Amino acid sequence: MEINVAERIRLFRVRTGLSQKEFAEKVGLAPAAMNRLEKGNRQPDVEFLVAVRKLFGADLNELIAGEPDGPTKHALPLFGDDQLQEMGGDVAPRGWVGFPEVEGMSFAYRMRDESMFPVIHPGDVLLVRDEPARLGDRLLCRDETGRIRVRQLARRTTTGDALLAENPAYPETPLTGEIRVLGKIEAVLRKLPV
View 1 (tube, rainbow, N blue to C red):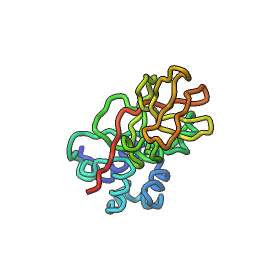
View 2 (cartoon, rainbow, N blue to C red):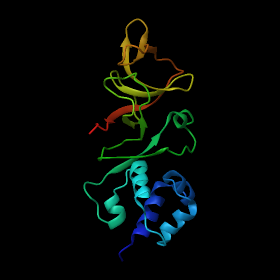
View 3 (cartoon, rainbow, N blue to C red):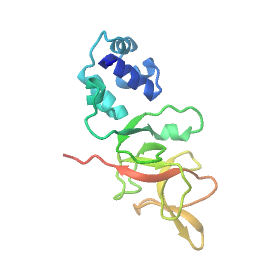
View 4 (cartoon, rainbow, N blue to C red):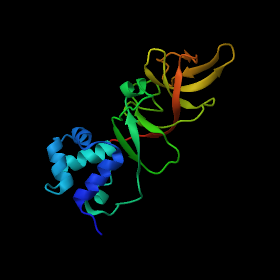
Protein backbone atom coordinates (compact mmCIF):
# COMPACT_ATOMS: atom_id res chain seq x y z
CA MET A 1 0.00 0.00 0.00
CA GLU A 2 1.45 3.34 -1.08
CA ILE A 3 1.19 6.14 1.46
CA ASN A 4 0.43 9.73 0.51
CA VAL A 5 2.18 12.97 1.46
CA ALA A 6 -0.20 13.56 4.41
CA GLU A 7 0.66 10.18 5.93
CA ARG A 8 4.40 10.73 5.32
CA ILE A 9 4.18 14.10 7.12
CA ARG A 10 2.34 12.47 10.03
CA LEU A 11 4.89 9.63 10.26
CA PHE A 12 7.77 12.12 10.09
CA ARG A 13 6.23 14.16 12.93
CA VAL A 14 5.72 11.01 15.03
CA ARG A 15 9.41 10.07 14.52
CA THR A 16 10.45 13.45 15.97
CA GLY A 17 8.66 12.55 19.20
CA LEU A 18 6.66 15.79 19.17
CA SER A 19 2.92 16.16 19.56
CA GLN A 20 0.98 17.68 16.68
CA LYS A 21 0.74 20.98 18.61
CA GLU A 22 4.48 21.05 19.50
CA PHE A 23 5.48 20.28 15.91
CA ALA A 24 3.12 22.96 14.58
CA GLU A 25 4.61 25.57 16.93
CA LYS A 26 8.17 24.71 15.86
CA VAL A 27 7.39 25.03 12.13
CA GLY A 28 5.24 28.15 12.52
CA LEU A 29 1.81 26.66 11.85
CA ALA A 30 -1.42 26.83 13.78
CA PRO A 31 -2.25 23.42 15.33
CA ALA A 32 -5.44 23.26 13.24
CA ALA A 33 -3.41 23.78 10.04
CA MET A 34 -1.05 20.97 11.09
CA ASN A 35 -4.06 18.73 11.67
CA ARG A 36 -5.38 19.51 8.17
CA LEU A 37 -1.94 18.71 6.68
CA GLU A 38 -1.84 15.31 8.36
CA LYS A 39 -5.42 14.50 7.27
CA GLY A 40 -4.67 15.44 3.66
CA ASN A 41 -7.08 18.40 3.66
CA ARG A 42 -4.22 20.78 2.91
CA GLN A 43 -1.03 20.53 0.85
CA PRO A 44 2.30 21.57 2.40
CA ASP A 45 3.44 25.03 1.31
CA VAL A 46 7.01 26.21 0.73
CA GLU A 47 7.30 27.89 4.16
CA PHE A 48 6.31 24.64 5.90
CA LEU A 49 8.77 22.58 3.87
CA VAL A 50 11.63 25.03 4.43
CA ALA A 51 10.95 25.03 8.20
CA VAL A 52 10.86 21.21 8.34
CA ARG A 53 14.12 21.01 6.38
CA LYS A 54 15.82 23.67 8.54
CA LEU A 55 14.64 22.43 11.94
CA PHE A 56 14.73 18.68 11.44
CA GLY A 57 17.06 18.08 8.50
CA ALA A 58 14.26 16.37 6.58
CA ASP A 59 14.81 14.93 3.13
CA LEU A 60 12.07 16.88 1.34
CA ASN A 61 12.02 14.67 -1.74
CA GLU A 62 11.33 11.67 0.48
CA LEU A 63 8.72 13.59 2.49
CA ILE A 64 6.80 14.73 -0.60
CA ALA A 65 7.40 11.95 -3.14
CA GLY A 66 8.38 9.04 -0.91
CA GLU A 67 11.80 8.68 -2.56
CA PRO A 68 15.04 9.80 -0.92
CA ASP A 69 17.17 12.26 -2.89
CA GLY A 70 20.49 10.80 -1.83
CA PRO A 71 22.25 8.92 0.95
CA THR A 72 20.10 8.64 4.04
CA LYS A 73 20.67 11.43 6.50
CA HIS A 74 20.52 10.95 10.22
CA ALA A 75 19.32 13.55 12.67
CA LEU A 76 20.48 14.54 16.13
CA PRO A 77 18.64 16.71 18.62
CA LEU A 78 20.06 20.26 18.68
CA PHE A 79 20.28 21.76 22.18
CA GLY A 80 20.90 25.38 23.12
CA ASP A 81 22.67 26.76 26.20
CA ASP A 82 19.45 26.99 28.20
CA GLN A 83 18.53 23.35 27.53
CA LEU A 84 22.03 22.05 28.34
CA GLN A 85 21.93 23.88 31.65
CA GLU A 86 18.84 21.81 32.56
CA MET A 87 20.01 18.44 31.15
CA GLY A 88 18.91 15.47 33.16
CA GLY A 89 15.14 15.51 32.74
CA ASP A 90 12.99 15.41 29.65
CA VAL A 91 14.43 18.41 27.84
CA ALA A 92 12.95 19.06 24.40
CA PRO A 93 15.54 19.92 21.74
CA ARG A 94 15.51 23.30 19.99
CA GLY A 95 15.51 21.50 16.66
CA TRP A 96 17.16 18.68 14.76
CA VAL A 97 20.34 18.59 12.67
CA GLY A 98 20.63 16.27 9.68
CA PHE A 99 24.08 14.93 8.83
CA PRO A 100 25.72 12.07 6.93
CA GLU A 101 25.87 8.86 8.96
CA VAL A 102 28.31 9.03 11.86
CA GLU A 103 28.13 6.24 14.44
CA GLY A 104 27.38 6.92 18.08
CA MET A 105 26.65 10.65 18.20
CA SER A 106 24.53 11.77 21.17
CA PHE A 107 23.39 15.29 20.28
CA ALA A 108 24.34 18.51 18.50
CA TYR A 109 25.17 21.99 19.81
CA ARG A 110 25.45 25.30 17.93
CA MET A 111 28.65 27.20 18.86
CA ARG A 112 27.88 30.59 20.41
CA ASP A 113 31.17 32.36 21.09
CA GLU A 114 34.63 32.81 19.54
CA SER A 115 36.56 30.90 22.21
CA MET A 116 37.66 28.18 19.76
CA PHE A 117 38.14 30.48 16.74
CA PRO A 118 39.71 29.91 14.17
CA VAL A 119 39.16 26.13 14.53
CA ILE A 120 35.45 26.37 15.43
CA HIS A 121 33.41 29.40 14.38
CA PRO A 122 30.31 30.93 15.99
CA GLY A 123 27.30 29.28 14.33
CA ASP A 124 29.07 25.98 13.61
CA VAL A 125 27.11 22.89 14.63
CA LEU A 126 29.09 20.52 16.83
CA LEU A 127 28.28 16.80 16.85
CA VAL A 128 28.83 15.56 20.39
CA ARG A 129 29.52 12.00 21.57
CA ASP A 130 28.91 10.97 25.17
CA GLU A 131 32.19 9.26 26.05
CA PRO A 132 35.08 9.75 28.50
CA ALA A 133 37.49 12.59 27.71
CA ARG A 134 41.16 12.12 26.85
CA LEU A 135 43.96 14.66 26.68
CA GLY A 136 43.72 16.72 23.50
CA ASP A 137 39.97 16.19 23.06
CA ARG A 138 37.73 19.17 22.41
CA LEU A 139 34.91 19.03 24.94
CA LEU A 140 31.49 20.53 25.56
CA CYS A 141 31.35 21.48 29.25
CA ARG A 142 29.06 23.16 31.73
CA ASP A 143 30.93 25.30 34.27
CA GLU A 144 30.04 26.04 37.90
CA THR A 145 27.87 29.01 36.86
CA GLY A 146 25.88 26.89 34.38
CA ARG A 147 27.49 28.44 31.27
CA ILE A 148 28.19 26.13 28.36
CA ARG A 149 31.75 26.18 27.08
CA VAL A 150 33.76 24.43 24.37
CA ARG A 151 37.38 23.85 25.34
CA GLN A 152 40.32 21.52 24.71
CA LEU A 153 41.53 19.26 27.52
CA ALA A 154 45.24 19.78 28.29
CA ARG A 155 47.63 18.69 31.03
CA ARG A 156 49.52 21.28 33.02
CA THR A 157 52.34 19.76 35.04
CA THR A 158 52.02 22.06 38.04
CA THR A 159 48.28 22.70 38.16
CA GLY A 160 46.75 19.47 36.83
CA ASP A 161 44.36 19.29 33.88
CA ALA A 162 42.99 22.45 32.32
CA LEU A 163 40.49 23.50 29.67
CA LEU A 164 42.01 25.69 26.96
CA ALA A 165 40.45 27.94 24.36
CA GLU A 166 41.99 28.26 20.88
CA ASN A 167 41.43 32.03 21.07
CA PRO A 168 44.03 33.63 23.40
CA ALA A 169 41.47 36.24 24.50
CA TYR A 170 39.75 33.52 26.56
CA PRO A 171 41.45 32.43 29.81
CA GLU A 172 42.61 28.93 30.69
CA THR A 173 40.22 27.19 33.10
CA PRO A 174 41.42 24.60 35.64
CA LEU A 175 39.44 21.35 35.35
CA THR A 176 37.74 21.05 38.73
CA GLY A 177 34.94 18.88 40.08
CA GLU A 178 32.54 21.79 39.54
CA ILE A 179 32.88 21.52 35.75
CA ARG A 180 30.73 18.86 34.08
CA VAL A 181 31.91 17.40 30.79
CA LEU A 182 28.80 16.93 28.62
CA GLY A 183 30.60 15.17 25.79
CA LYS A 184 33.42 15.04 23.28
CA ILE A 185 33.23 17.11 20.07
CA GLU A 186 33.44 14.52 17.31
CA ALA A 187 32.68 16.62 14.23
CA VAL A 188 32.02 20.22 13.20
CA LEU A 189 29.44 21.16 10.56
CA ARG A 190 29.89 24.55 8.92
CA LYS A 191 27.85 26.25 6.23
CA LEU A 192 30.17 28.02 3.87
CA PRO A 193 29.07 31.32 2.32
CA VAL A 194 28.18 30.99 -1.35
